[in-house]
Length: 216
Image (cartoon, rainbow, N blue to C red):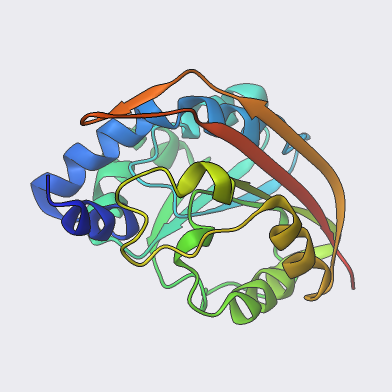
């Protein structure tokens, strides 16, 4: 298997291969997505932004919690924006959800627009985390929450594709990164997941969910 090509598709899914990768991610990342959504603590009226929503498979789970929320998904993969829009066509038509093509470091929203911002398995690709967090900080309302879902470094280093362009984080690394960039960590959730088979390699995944408050 060409793990470098897999890594590139995980970062920015494109074309038929990207669609297949996204479908596979929905399966392998189901629990980490569910755990992240649970820790969003969604309330009626929340305006929620997801950074890197893939094909939008889990949007239905967010809107099922409370129909009186607004969801926006952004991705810099045109393929994923197209797929997410098709998959969630009913929510798009009703005005509950929208999907945009954008670089997450430069998002086309006004300051203080969102009550919650979250992202799952994208932090590994942030080339300039301070700039990324500054943009998130700009978009969040005062004391609003950001939730980061990731697999910790001691897990990720066992995947054969992470040597190709991934930046890995331990729990302590994420806490330090957030605290150095005007966020206060308020909650951490960790959960072990069933084993995954990648070719001939068995990996024991874990979810690490970090909840932080924007300090403004």
